[in-house]
Image (tube, rainbow, N blue to C red; front, side, top):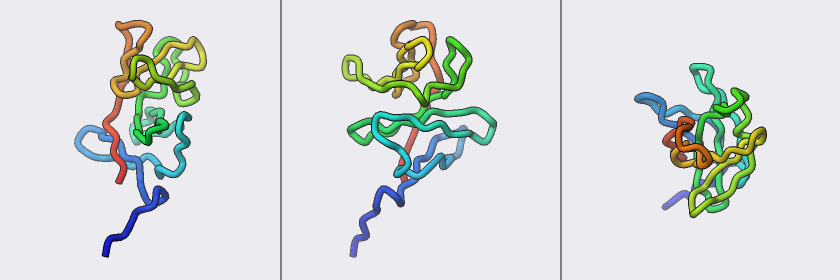
Length: 116
């Protein structure tokens, strides 16, 4: 007999160094909106689920202003790449790679994510 897992049973986990860290339940994510989470070392991450169900995590700190606000940014896609636009100065960050789409010299850390 196979048991189906509900999304309330799934956890979002990030790869940190050599271990997986549970950030939140998948059910707390709303497609197109971000959630901020605190890592064990005190850093913040911004976690997103897009409308296709894919989950991404990047640093929450906007490198242009130093404010921890990327989780509150607007999401979208550019040439098929999912991004979040900072709510302050509007720079766009690729959710998969962390690369700033508006300044190729800037990037934020992107984390490997899984749901279990």
